[in-house]
Amino acid sequence: MSKKRRSYTPEFKTKVVLELLEGEKTLNEVASKYEILPTSLKSWKKQFLENASLAFDKSAVVKEYKEKITKLEREHNQLAKKVGTLTIERDWLAGKLCSLDLSTKKRLASEGDVQAAQTDKIPSLNRRLEMMRISKTAWYYRHTDPFGSNEDILLLNMIDHIYTTHPYYGHRRIQKLLNRLGFNIGRKRVISAMKHMGIKALYPKQKTTVANKAHPKHPYLLESYKNDKGQVVVKQSNEVWSTDITYIRLEKGYVYLAAVIDWYSKRILAWKLSTTMDISLTTSVLKEALAHHTKPKIFNTDQGSQYTAKEHIDILVQHGISISMDAKGRSIDNIVIERFWRTLKYEDVYPKSYTTLKEAKEGIGEYIQTYNRYRLHSAIDYRTPDEAYFDIVNNEDFKREEWVKAAV
Image (cartoon, rainbow, N blue to C red; front, side, top):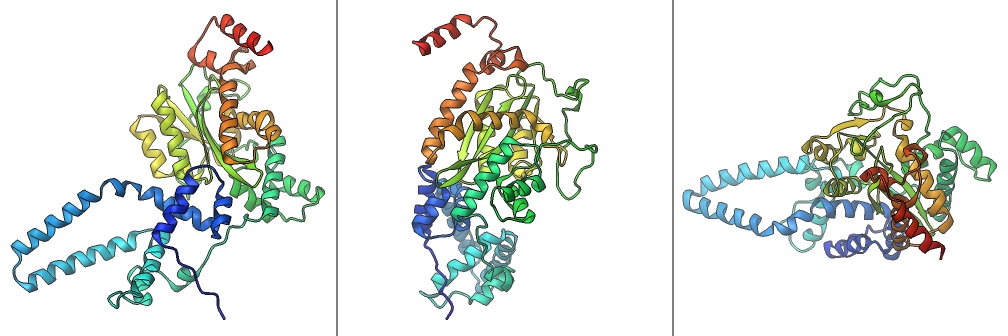
């Protein structure tokens, strides 16, 4: 006998998503608490954020439709004209339904099951699928999280550690090292895990100008900043910013950290932790950096889907910022943020072994503040990121006071 499919009310979904957004627990912990799939929770969070603006526009929508109904009643007294108008509106709404993404259409079709149990005025499931152009295969397919078990999280943590120690290792070397360490795993599984974590080997290729025609991207604009040794040299703050996402392991799960860094000073301008690696993570960090700092001339990223998304591109275009993207297979083109990830993990994340998301937020926040104020960098004449970014020439008294205080 087949297992009956579970359905969840909008109230239940809202409660679970709000608990996830509070940031006290990881996605896996919340999903385990309510016995739901992590992928379902990810989908609910995405849907919640995409439709959050409707909560503030509800009155306007109601008013608009009331005005339309009043106008129709006044101008069209004949039943035939009303039916014709409603037919046009129905066809328009049907077209809009078909243009929605698959997850949204499946949600709407699923909610119809609850309504159908209360009234006989709801189309059958087959009719609903036909109206929204959802195939039976797509409807009954259920995706499961490929890395949801404790063993999988241990594997991800090990890959993260190997990658941080040897960022130039590709999936072949990582797989061989994992085999030596006792993990019975194939190369395809390693490739899937690295894709899931959003990491790839840091190594250059000879061809750097060949674009991926199937993947919309922008050209790499930092070639003109390279010196004779092929190193990118930026000579002032807010000339070039860079960003990326990295995997942060916790005791019972993992989260993602996104940050924006100033290429010249190495200063972290904005950062955020999230339980999911989605567009809202990258756009919120970018908006925060632009809200508190002078906009850069160039913003450099990799070709990840979060950065090629229309929402992220639109923000940069609206601010008149030139968009630069690493060439395919050239993670080394974004080396300044990759080096910061390595520093952060070896100096803070690994030694402290954060247990919860709350602990990670507090600890990483303290580390970044210390990094910006006190960490000396040889690339900027052994100044701190704050000193280089704000062009502080004489800061000896400030540093001596703080260091003496720490020593005492």
